[in-house]
Image (cartoon, rainbow, N blue to C red; front, side, top):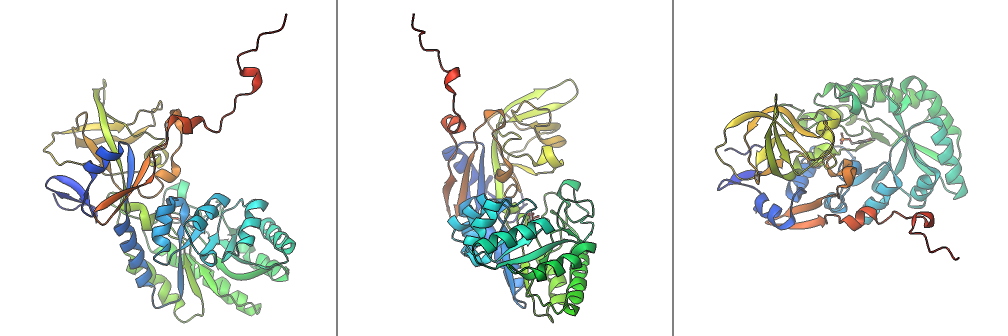
Length: 429
Ligand SMILES: *Cc1c(COP(=O)(O)O)cnc(C)c1O
């Protein structure tokens, strides 16, 4: 009964974190619900921040991993900036009081409205992903009589050796400026009057568990820096994106120390500020999904354990065949069976695990699906007209609801019934 995940442990057979029992949370808040532990988030952030203390750096939390404003705020209070990919995320980051000058705006499809609002807010920089976007930002900045700071996001064509859906730095990927075209675009950017090129960036993918893809892409980026120096163009920033993996099961991602040493070694003699955009590695293992077993059932060839959380709440297993460890919130001696843990959605893909040897959980048992702090709630949907579930934050022995469970009224609140579908008024004779 050893601690399996840092920050979660069984105390008197009950799974707890920071002095709060997950059973108690489920009883008060209902299931399913997401639970995040602020102390785990802080410790993870501070470890990364400290390991970079020998070089100038800004850690811009990738909001898309978990956009709850309390999560962003918890990181912001420790000094984090934000990496955003939409106007909605800009809104959230500002609501969470992230200083504008620590916000970087990434993404291949920024609209004019989104660009305008980011210029108005004077963010740290846009991470530009194409020539047309660069021209659009120049035009937008001109209309505000301003100069917008930009980094160019380069696609270094490095294989991150991760799931193809979350690899973003390969030649065939839609992300970034092709490495071979980078110098041309840098020259073009230098000619524009309303953009100021402050650096280069890359983000090669997510859930990366080796160091080499990071150091390879850093080396490719630095090669570009050296070529730029010949153009008499000196940058202040290098953005190495996010992507550091976490351990869901048997993965062994590099330690924070190993990960950052790779950057420090190359950057310590250069006058560059390192920007990192971690998402998953900051919050992934700081959160769990609590779900209750509804039924057990024997199919002709498989066993099923049916729980109250569906793929609309956590899509990672269905989308990426992702593995999540499932622990009982109350430790008992269970018989093991081979079973699939499935949700209530009307899709065969609605699974938490497929055919895994697992405890023979019984109806009413509370389960904790581990490593759900990143890309859990943020990828949830209303599929099957299921409401978005509550989110809770544990902080020093207490828990706080940081998002209420939606109601059925919330589900339809933006829908409008046109008059022709309303009960016909009596036609006058
Ligand atoms: C998704 C994303 C990140 C965060 O990735 P993680 O794997 O969660 O660290 C960072 N930067 C950009 C541009 C992204 O799209």
